[in-house]
Image 1 (spheres, rainbow, N blue to C red):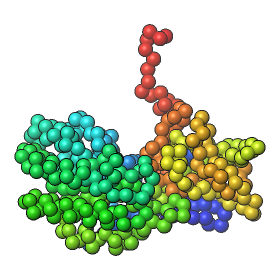
Image 2: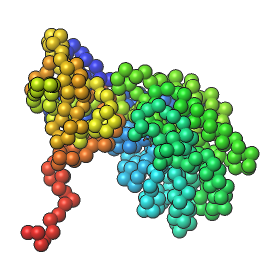
Image 3: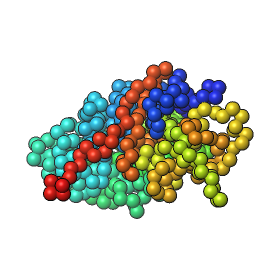
Length: 421
Ligand code: PLP
Protein backbone atom coordinates (compact mmCIF):
# COMPACT_ATOMS: atom_id res chain seq x y z
CA UNK A 1 0.00 0.00 0.00
CA UNK A 2 1.24 3.46 -0.79
CA UNK A 3 0.18 7.03 -1.40
CA UNK A 4 1.01 7.27 -5.12
CA UNK A 5 -2.31 7.28 -6.97
CA UNK A 6 -3.97 8.60 -10.08
CA UNK A 7 -6.64 11.23 -9.65
CA UNK A 8 -8.23 11.54 -13.04
CA UNK A 9 -5.22 11.41 -15.37
CA UNK A 10 -2.56 12.74 -13.05
CA UNK A 11 -0.30 10.71 -10.79
CA UNK A 12 -0.19 12.20 -7.30
CA UNK A 13 1.98 11.70 -4.27
CA UNK A 14 -0.48 12.25 -1.44
CA UNK A 15 -2.14 15.56 -2.46
CA UNK A 16 0.64 16.81 -4.74
CA UNK A 17 0.73 16.36 -8.51
CA UNK A 18 3.91 14.66 -9.66
CA UNK A 19 3.88 16.71 -12.87
CA UNK A 20 4.09 19.91 -10.79
CA UNK A 21 7.07 18.56 -8.88
CA UNK A 22 8.81 17.59 -12.13
CA UNK A 23 8.20 21.10 -13.52
CA UNK A 24 9.37 22.86 -10.39
CA UNK A 25 12.39 20.76 -9.44
CA UNK A 26 13.42 19.19 -12.74
CA UNK A 27 14.14 15.52 -13.42
CA UNK A 28 15.38 12.94 -12.58
CA UNK A 29 13.77 13.39 -9.20
CA UNK A 30 13.11 11.15 -6.20
CA UNK A 31 9.74 11.74 -4.55
CA UNK A 32 8.85 10.19 -1.18
CA UNK A 33 5.57 10.01 0.67
CA UNK A 34 5.87 10.78 4.39
CA UNK A 35 2.51 9.14 5.12
CA UNK A 36 3.54 5.89 3.42
CA UNK A 37 6.93 5.85 5.14
CA UNK A 38 5.52 6.32 8.63
CA UNK A 39 2.52 4.11 7.88
CA UNK A 40 4.78 1.14 7.09
CA UNK A 41 6.80 1.65 10.25
CA UNK A 42 3.67 1.86 12.41
CA UNK A 43 2.14 -1.22 10.75
CA UNK A 44 5.14 -3.30 11.72
CA UNK A 45 5.25 -1.82 15.20
CA UNK A 46 1.62 -2.60 15.85
CA UNK A 47 1.82 -6.13 14.32
CA UNK A 48 4.65 -6.98 16.74
CA UNK A 49 3.29 -5.04 19.72
CA UNK A 50 3.08 -8.23 21.79
CA UNK A 51 6.90 -8.41 22.00
CA UNK A 52 7.49 -4.64 21.87
CA UNK A 53 10.53 -4.90 19.57
CA UNK A 54 13.11 -2.20 19.02
CA UNK A 55 12.65 -1.59 15.28
CA UNK A 56 16.01 -0.42 13.97
CA UNK A 57 15.35 0.92 10.46
CA UNK A 58 18.15 -0.19 8.15
CA UNK A 59 19.87 3.05 7.14
CA UNK A 60 21.41 1.54 4.01
CA UNK A 61 17.98 1.28 2.39
CA UNK A 62 17.68 5.06 2.27
CA UNK A 63 19.92 7.21 4.42
CA UNK A 64 18.49 10.68 3.82
CA UNK A 65 18.52 12.62 7.11
CA UNK A 66 14.87 13.64 6.79
CA UNK A 67 13.83 10.00 6.43
CA UNK A 68 15.92 8.98 9.41
CA UNK A 69 14.56 11.84 11.53
CA UNK A 70 10.95 11.07 10.60
CA UNK A 71 11.37 7.44 11.72
CA UNK A 72 13.43 8.22 14.82
CA UNK A 73 10.71 10.67 15.90
CA UNK A 74 8.23 7.79 15.80
CA UNK A 75 10.44 5.68 18.06
CA UNK A 76 12.59 3.81 15.54
CA UNK A 77 16.18 2.88 16.23
CA UNK A 78 18.72 2.57 13.41
CA UNK A 79 20.71 -0.31 11.96
CA UNK A 80 24.03 1.01 10.63
CA UNK A 81 26.93 -0.54 8.72
CA UNK A 82 29.63 2.14 8.59
CA UNK A 83 31.13 5.17 10.26
CA UNK A 84 29.29 7.30 7.72
CA UNK A 85 25.97 5.79 8.74
CA UNK A 86 26.85 6.37 12.42
CA UNK A 87 27.49 10.02 11.56
CA UNK A 88 24.11 10.23 9.82
CA UNK A 89 22.34 8.46 12.70
CA UNK A 90 23.73 10.98 15.17
CA UNK A 91 22.94 13.93 12.88
CA UNK A 92 19.36 12.67 12.62
CA UNK A 93 19.14 12.73 16.41
CA UNK A 94 18.92 8.98 17.04
CA UNK A 95 19.62 8.13 20.68
CA UNK A 96 22.78 5.98 20.81
CA UNK A 97 21.04 3.26 22.79
CA UNK A 98 18.80 2.67 19.75
CA UNK A 99 21.70 2.06 17.32
CA UNK A 100 22.97 -1.39 16.29
CA UNK A 101 26.00 -1.79 14.04
CA UNK A 102 26.51 -4.70 11.57
CA UNK A 103 29.10 -5.18 8.74
CA UNK A 104 31.73 -7.82 8.05
CA UNK A 105 34.45 -5.19 7.75
CA UNK A 106 34.33 -2.61 10.54
CA UNK A 107 37.61 -0.70 10.74
CA UNK A 108 39.36 0.10 14.03
CA UNK A 109 38.45 3.76 13.57
CA UNK A 110 34.77 2.92 13.03
CA UNK A 111 34.72 0.61 16.07
CA UNK A 112 36.28 3.28 18.25
CA UNK A 113 33.81 5.95 17.13
CA UNK A 114 30.86 3.63 17.78
CA UNK A 115 32.12 2.67 21.25
CA UNK A 116 32.67 6.33 22.14
CA UNK A 117 29.12 7.10 20.94
CA UNK A 118 27.70 4.45 23.28
CA UNK A 119 25.69 2.44 20.72
CA UNK A 120 23.46 -0.40 21.96
CA UNK A 121 25.66 -3.07 20.39
CA UNK A 122 27.76 -4.32 17.53
CA UNK A 123 26.53 -7.23 15.43
CA UNK A 124 29.83 -9.08 15.23
CA UNK A 125 30.55 -11.16 12.13
CA UNK A 126 33.83 -12.97 12.94
CA UNK A 127 36.20 -13.91 15.77
CA UNK A 128 39.00 -11.58 14.58
CA UNK A 129 36.49 -8.71 14.66
CA UNK A 130 35.45 -9.66 18.19
CA UNK A 131 39.10 -9.66 19.34
CA UNK A 132 39.55 -6.26 17.74
CA UNK A 133 36.52 -4.87 19.58
CA UNK A 134 37.84 -6.29 22.89
CA UNK A 135 41.24 -4.71 22.23
CA UNK A 136 39.78 -1.27 21.39
CA UNK A 137 37.25 -1.35 24.24
CA UNK A 138 40.03 -2.17 26.72
CA UNK A 139 42.09 0.76 25.46
CA UNK A 140 39.05 3.03 25.85
CA UNK A 141 38.26 1.50 29.26
CA UNK A 142 34.69 0.68 28.19
CA UNK A 143 32.77 -2.56 28.47
CA UNK A 144 30.71 -3.09 25.30
CA UNK A 145 27.77 -5.28 24.44
CA UNK A 146 27.83 -7.31 21.26
CA UNK A 147 25.53 -9.65 19.40
CA UNK A 148 27.06 -12.46 17.37
CA UNK A 149 25.70 -12.58 13.86
CA UNK A 150 24.79 -16.20 13.20
CA UNK A 151 24.67 -17.61 9.71
CA UNK A 152 21.78 -20.08 10.12
CA UNK A 153 22.24 -21.67 6.68
CA UNK A 154 18.68 -21.30 5.46
CA UNK A 155 17.47 -20.70 1.92
CA UNK A 156 15.51 -17.42 1.72
CA UNK A 157 14.43 -17.95 -1.93
CA UNK A 158 15.44 -14.52 -3.15
CA UNK A 159 18.02 -13.15 -5.62
CA UNK A 160 21.50 -14.61 -5.05
CA UNK A 161 23.03 -11.14 -4.54
CA UNK A 162 20.66 -10.45 -1.62
CA UNK A 163 20.88 -13.89 -0.02
CA UNK A 164 22.95 -13.57 3.14
CA UNK A 165 22.10 -16.49 5.43
CA UNK A 166 23.68 -19.43 3.56
CA UNK A 167 27.04 -20.80 4.59
CA UNK A 168 28.42 -19.89 1.16
CA UNK A 169 27.79 -16.20 1.98
CA UNK A 170 30.42 -14.07 3.71
CA UNK A 171 28.07 -13.03 6.53
CA UNK A 172 27.88 -14.24 10.12
CA UNK A 173 29.25 -17.24 11.96
CA UNK A 174 28.06 -20.86 11.81
CA UNK A 175 26.47 -22.34 14.94
CA UNK A 176 29.38 -24.56 15.97
CA UNK A 177 31.97 -21.79 15.64
CA UNK A 178 29.63 -19.38 17.43
CA UNK A 179 29.34 -21.76 20.36
CA UNK A 180 33.13 -22.05 20.61
CA UNK A 181 33.52 -18.26 20.38
CA UNK A 182 30.90 -17.66 23.07
CA UNK A 183 32.65 -20.08 25.43
CA UNK A 184 36.04 -18.53 24.71
CA UNK A 185 34.78 -14.99 25.10
CA UNK A 186 33.57 -15.63 28.63
CA UNK A 187 37.08 -14.67 29.62
CA UNK A 188 37.03 -11.34 27.72
CA UNK A 189 37.19 -8.38 30.05
CA UNK A 190 35.62 -5.66 27.90
CA UNK A 191 33.16 -7.50 25.67
CA UNK A 192 29.90 -9.11 26.70
CA UNK A 193 27.96 -11.27 24.24
CA UNK A 194 24.42 -10.33 25.14
CA UNK A 195 22.64 -11.03 21.89
CA UNK A 196 22.45 -13.10 18.74
CA UNK A 197 21.67 -11.69 15.33
CA UNK A 198 20.47 -13.11 12.03
CA UNK A 199 19.76 -11.45 8.71
CA UNK A 200 19.08 -14.08 6.06
CA UNK A 201 18.54 -11.92 3.00
CA UNK A 202 16.35 -9.27 1.44
CA UNK A 203 13.06 -9.16 -0.49
CA UNK A 204 11.86 -12.37 1.17
CA UNK A 205 8.18 -12.83 0.45
CA UNK A 206 7.11 -15.58 2.88
CA UNK A 207 7.48 -16.09 6.61
CA UNK A 208 8.85 -19.62 6.24
CA UNK A 209 12.59 -18.88 5.88
CA UNK A 210 12.37 -16.50 8.85
CA UNK A 211 10.54 -19.11 10.92
CA UNK A 212 13.15 -21.73 9.98
CA UNK A 213 16.05 -19.46 10.96
CA UNK A 214 14.39 -18.27 14.18
CA UNK A 215 13.53 -21.83 15.22
CA UNK A 216 17.16 -22.84 14.68
CA UNK A 217 18.55 -19.92 16.64
CA UNK A 218 16.13 -20.26 19.54
CA UNK A 219 17.12 -23.93 19.83
CA UNK A 220 20.74 -22.82 19.88
CA UNK A 221 20.04 -20.26 22.62
CA UNK A 222 18.34 -22.98 24.70
CA UNK A 223 21.44 -25.14 24.33
CA UNK A 224 23.61 -22.26 25.52
CA UNK A 225 21.37 -21.79 28.55
CA UNK A 226 22.01 -25.38 29.53
CA UNK A 227 25.71 -24.48 29.56
CA UNK A 228 25.01 -21.50 31.81
CA UNK A 229 25.15 -18.84 29.09
CA UNK A 230 22.32 -16.37 29.08
CA UNK A 231 21.42 -14.46 25.92
CA UNK A 232 19.26 -11.37 26.38
CA UNK A 233 18.56 -10.10 22.84
CA UNK A 234 17.52 -11.72 19.59
CA UNK A 235 17.92 -9.53 16.51
CA UNK A 236 15.95 -11.08 13.64
CA UNK A 237 17.36 -8.69 11.01
CA UNK A 238 15.39 -7.29 8.09
CA UNK A 239 14.50 -8.79 4.74
CA UNK A 240 10.73 -8.42 4.47
CA UNK A 241 9.72 -8.26 0.83
CA UNK A 242 7.47 -5.71 -0.86
CA UNK A 243 5.40 -5.64 -4.06
CA UNK A 244 7.42 -4.70 -7.14
CA UNK A 245 5.74 -6.88 -9.73
CA UNK A 246 3.30 -9.73 -9.21
CA UNK A 247 4.85 -11.10 -6.02
CA UNK A 248 2.51 -11.43 -3.05
CA UNK A 249 4.69 -10.64 -0.03
CA UNK A 250 3.25 -11.22 3.42
CA UNK A 251 1.74 -8.24 5.18
CA UNK A 252 3.17 -7.16 8.54
CA UNK A 253 0.23 -8.93 10.22
CA UNK A 254 0.75 -12.18 8.31
CA UNK A 255 4.47 -12.09 9.03
CA UNK A 256 3.73 -11.50 12.70
CA UNK A 257 1.17 -14.33 12.76
CA UNK A 258 3.89 -16.72 11.53
CA UNK A 259 6.75 -15.72 13.78
CA UNK A 260 5.27 -13.98 16.84
CA UNK A 261 4.47 -17.26 18.62
CA UNK A 262 8.16 -18.24 18.32
CA UNK A 263 9.36 -14.86 19.56
CA UNK A 264 6.90 -14.69 22.47
CA UNK A 265 7.85 -18.14 23.66
CA UNK A 266 11.55 -17.28 23.58
CA UNK A 267 11.17 -14.57 26.25
CA UNK A 268 14.04 -12.66 24.56
CA UNK A 269 14.21 -8.92 23.90
CA UNK A 270 13.52 -8.58 20.17
CA UNK A 271 15.21 -6.31 17.65
CA UNK A 272 14.23 -6.00 13.98
CA UNK A 273 16.11 -4.30 11.13
CA UNK A 274 13.67 -3.67 8.26
CA UNK A 275 14.72 -1.37 5.45
CA UNK A 276 12.93 -2.11 2.20
CA UNK A 277 9.59 -2.84 3.90
CA UNK A 278 9.51 0.65 5.39
CA UNK A 279 10.82 2.81 2.57
CA UNK A 280 10.63 0.75 -0.66
CA UNK A 281 7.14 1.69 -1.74
CA UNK A 282 7.36 5.11 -0.13
CA UNK A 283 9.45 6.46 -3.02
CA UNK A 284 9.44 6.81 -6.81
CA UNK A 285 11.94 8.06 -9.36
CA UNK A 286 10.49 10.57 -11.80
CA UNK A 287 12.25 10.77 -15.13
CA UNK A 288 11.56 12.59 -18.39
CA UNK A 289 11.55 11.13 -21.89
CA UNK A 290 14.37 12.60 -23.97
CA UNK A 291 13.94 10.65 -27.18
CA UNK A 292 11.95 7.78 -28.62
CA UNK A 293 14.14 5.68 -30.88
CA UNK A 294 12.98 2.89 -33.14
CA UNK A 295 15.50 0.37 -34.42
CA UNK A 296 14.80 -2.57 -36.75
CA UNK A 297 14.62 -4.83 -33.65
CA UNK A 298 13.33 -2.68 -30.81
CA UNK A 299 11.76 0.50 -29.57
CA UNK A 300 13.76 2.42 -26.98
CA UNK A 301 12.33 5.10 -24.72
CA UNK A 302 15.40 7.08 -23.70
CA UNK A 303 14.91 8.94 -20.42
CA UNK A 304 17.01 11.40 -18.42
CA UNK A 305 17.42 9.07 -15.40
CA UNK A 306 19.99 6.33 -15.51
CA UNK A 307 21.54 3.40 -13.69
CA UNK A 308 23.60 5.86 -11.66
CA UNK A 309 20.31 7.14 -10.17
CA UNK A 310 18.68 3.72 -9.68
CA UNK A 311 20.94 0.71 -10.17
CA UNK A 312 18.59 -2.11 -9.08
CA UNK A 313 17.53 -3.19 -12.61
CA UNK A 314 21.16 -3.25 -13.78
CA UNK A 315 22.46 -4.98 -10.65
CA UNK A 316 19.76 -7.56 -9.94
CA UNK A 317 17.64 -7.38 -13.10
CA UNK A 318 15.07 -6.06 -10.62
CA UNK A 319 11.59 -5.29 -11.87
CA UNK A 320 10.15 -1.81 -11.31
CA UNK A 321 6.73 -0.82 -12.52
CA UNK A 322 6.96 2.16 -14.93
CA UNK A 323 3.90 4.43 -15.09
CA UNK A 324 3.11 7.59 -17.04
CA UNK A 325 2.97 10.66 -14.80
CA UNK A 326 0.04 11.86 -16.91
CA UNK A 327 -2.12 9.20 -18.47
CA UNK A 328 -2.44 9.82 -22.18
CA UNK A 329 -5.95 10.68 -23.30
CA UNK A 330 -6.86 7.46 -24.99
CA UNK A 331 -3.29 6.73 -25.99
CA UNK A 332 -3.16 3.76 -23.57
CA UNK A 333 -5.02 1.77 -26.16
CA UNK A 334 -2.01 2.15 -28.43
CA UNK A 335 0.41 0.56 -25.96
CA UNK A 336 3.59 -0.88 -27.44
CA UNK A 337 6.51 -2.94 -26.24
CA UNK A 338 9.61 -0.90 -25.48
CA UNK A 339 12.78 -0.76 -23.40
CA UNK A 340 13.05 2.20 -21.04
CA UNK A 341 16.74 3.08 -21.00
CA UNK A 342 18.97 5.80 -19.56
CA UNK A 343 21.67 7.93 -21.17
CA UNK A 344 24.62 6.03 -19.67
CA UNK A 345 27.21 4.25 -21.78
CA UNK A 346 26.35 0.74 -20.58
CA UNK A 347 23.94 -1.77 -22.05
CA UNK A 348 22.88 -2.56 -18.48
CA UNK A 349 21.49 0.96 -18.18
CA UNK A 350 17.77 0.23 -18.26
CA UNK A 351 14.68 0.57 -16.07
CA UNK A 352 12.41 -1.77 -18.05
CA UNK A 353 12.86 -4.29 -20.87
CA UNK A 354 10.28 -5.41 -23.42
CA UNK A 355 7.63 -3.68 -21.37
CA UNK A 356 4.20 -2.91 -22.80
CA UNK A 357 3.88 0.83 -22.21
CA UNK A 358 1.47 3.50 -23.38
CA UNK A 359 2.75 5.58 -26.27
CA UNK A 360 4.91 8.33 -24.86
CA UNK A 361 6.45 11.34 -26.50
CA UNK A 362 9.51 13.47 -25.90
CA UNK A 363 8.97 15.57 -22.79
CA UNK A 364 6.52 13.18 -21.10
CA UNK A 365 7.39 12.07 -17.58
CA UNK A 366 7.49 8.50 -16.32
CA UNK A 367 7.43 7.28 -12.73
CA UNK A 368 9.65 4.35 -11.79
CA UNK A 369 7.71 2.90 -8.88
CA UNK A 370 9.01 1.25 -5.70
CA UNK A 371 12.28 3.19 -5.86
CA UNK A 372 12.44 4.31 -2.22
CA UNK A 373 14.78 1.56 -1.01
CA UNK A 374 18.25 0.99 -2.42
CA UNK A 375 17.52 3.79 -4.91
CA UNK A 376 19.23 7.03 -3.93
CA UNK A 377 21.38 5.24 -1.35
CA UNK A 378 23.01 3.24 -4.16
CA UNK A 379 23.20 6.20 -6.56
CA UNK A 380 26.58 7.22 -7.93
CA UNK A 381 28.18 9.90 -10.05
CA UNK A 382 29.05 7.47 -12.86
CA UNK A 383 29.39 9.27 -16.21
CA UNK A 384 29.91 12.41 -14.08
CA UNK A 385 26.19 12.71 -13.56
CA UNK A 386 24.90 14.77 -10.69
CA UNK A 387 22.86 12.76 -8.23
CA UNK A 388 19.19 13.73 -8.27
CA UNK A 389 17.16 15.92 -6.00
CA UNK A 390 15.00 14.29 -3.31
CA UNK A 391 11.58 15.61 -2.31
CA UNK A 392 9.43 14.54 0.63
CA UNK A 393 5.70 15.10 0.33
CA UNK A 394 3.47 15.28 3.39
CA UNK A 395 -0.21 15.77 2.49
CA UNK A 396 -0.20 18.91 0.30
CA UNK A 397 3.33 20.10 1.12
CA UNK A 398 6.54 19.23 -0.69
CA UNK A 399 9.93 19.65 0.98
CA UNK A 400 13.35 19.51 -0.65
CA UNK A 401 15.24 17.01 1.48
CA UNK A 402 18.28 16.95 -0.76
CA UNK A 403 19.30 19.40 -3.45
CA UNK A 404 20.40 18.19 -6.84
CA UNK A 405 24.21 18.10 -6.94
CA UNK A 406 25.99 20.82 -8.86
CA UNK A 407 28.81 20.33 -11.34
CA UNK A 408 31.02 21.93 -8.69
CA UNK A 409 30.05 19.12 -6.29
CA UNK A 410 31.36 16.60 -8.81
CA UNK A 411 34.93 17.90 -8.57
CA UNK A 412 34.78 19.36 -5.07
CA UNK A 413 37.36 16.98 -3.57
CA UNK A 414 39.63 16.72 -6.60
CA UNK A 415 42.87 18.57 -7.27
CA UNK A 416 45.34 18.77 -10.10
CA UNK A 417 48.99 18.46 -8.95
CA UNK A 418 50.88 21.72 -9.58
CA UNK A 419 53.47 20.01 -11.76
CA UNK A 420 50.76 19.00 -14.29
CA UNK A 421 50.04 22.63 -15.07
N1 PLP B 1 20.12 -5.85 8.39
C1 PLP B 1 21.23 -6.20 7.74
C2 PLP B 1 22.39 -6.73 8.53
C3 PLP B 1 21.32 -6.05 6.35
O1 PLP B 1 22.45 -6.40 5.72
C4 PLP B 1 20.21 -5.54 5.64
C5 PLP B 1 20.25 -5.40 4.17
O2 PLP B 1 21.12 -5.77 3.47
C6 PLP B 1 19.08 -5.17 6.36
C7 PLP B 1 19.06 -5.34 7.73
C8 PLP B 1 17.87 -4.58 5.68
O3 PLP B 1 17.31 -5.46 4.78
P1 PLP B 1 15.91 -5.14 4.08
O4 PLP B 1 16.03 -3.82 3.45
O5 PLP B 1 15.71 -6.23 3.13
O6 PLP B 1 14.87 -5.13 5.17
